[in-house]
Image 1 (tube, rainbow, N blue to C red):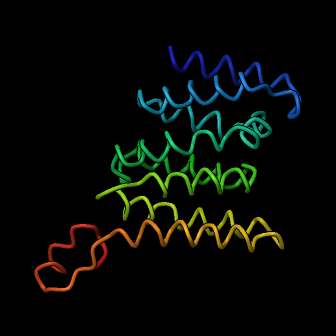
Image 2: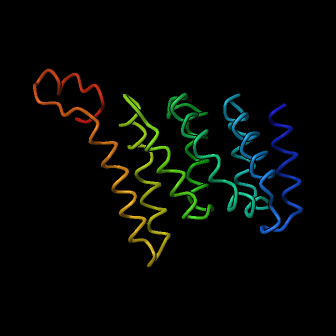
Length: 176
């Protein structure tokens, strides 16, 4: 059902101009894409994201998939076929999406991370964050500051391992 919904909203949006997308289109795209990811239809989402006919859709709405995509990457091991597919989707979003919107979406995921998820999410999103910041060109000073502030706020909540036992246990993945 989710795959069909995702195809329907994608086909409907293909017929529209970028500036004609409505709030409803954004909501439907996000909810259908999220359900596809949650139900394991990674290959279908990847197919839609890679299709050149959907470039304008992904540019405008793709950043809405960042949250569900990060959750899917956490769910699947990155070395599995599904995990690799999720990483390819993330790479494509970084290539196509509006950098300002994508930056906010990525930082929201960093900000929402808690507990044992902080370190893996930051490690996952550092490279995409760097790429997005570089795409901002001359207007990136504020965005770099915002990114650094967000990262420092999350990293500062992690405990610093002091003893050999804590370093060997490496509960938050800080020592590898």
